[in-house]
Length: 389
Image (cartoon, rainbow, N blue to C red; front, side, top):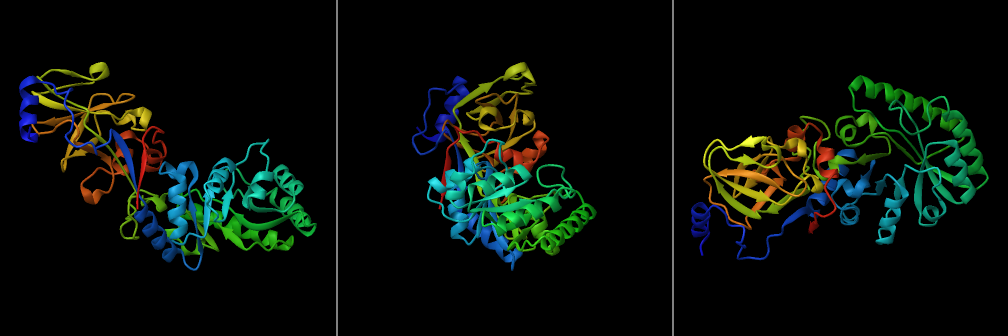
């Protein structure tokens, strides 16, 4: 049966839930991860940040993209460092055979530092207790985190001098080595960034006065790495930019040489022809305005598709965008394709590269009232990450 004949049968019978695609190569759901784009993004960011070194931040499963393949691709392309939030993430990379330098900077009060030290993972240190525990292990390599304005983790300015003094004592005693000192910007405004830069500079001077000579000073993440050469210091931490996504509204990532890495897609699981006035999905938040065709897509908020985007989002099917109608459910949502000829098994792209005509993560962020970081990072575990070389 031809695709056109199948579509005609759908319109006559009203439902084709027993239909199956002739080809078995269209998955129910998948996130295609373009590792070539990762490599290209690393090359672009390294050129942008030079002579500073580049840290590829692969925390939170590489912002939902898959930490191990992304880390490997980033290192192959020249990223000198990898950054993760916690030691569980760091050790998973080590267990997968990733040997590049790694920094981890969030720790529980009970975290045992010894395995990470043995594995050659740098410890981001934010408290005197963490500093003492690192020194007790022996041979630890640490990077001191400073709070220059976010009021999160890190030594606040009033506590930093004591931390520098104690770190210098432990270094002289051979208990640890201070490889780096770093902080994080709020990206609120140029004036706020300037204020944080001033605090950071003063604290670096205090560290030097205490006898510390770190080889790495870092403050800039993706946005500052692109826009503020004066904030790059010895290393920049590429987070969202590594994945080819803008770090702030309006940023032209193409002009920076960056490409989106993730394309989230599924396949149509059912097609139904419905009359005007028909209710759609839970709560009937949408009713059809005319006779139309609805296509069922087997992804939902359990997969990270934001429910808040119900009745607002669009998807790409057969080169055309169509609206998501009704509430996005846990496992599925519906698309109004009008009179377009679609069939079970047709590929549906939720987000990807705008140059393909697909909606972007920024589109979905706008539809859901959030940011692109959350759109990719919340991708559910049952969505296979499919690396594309």
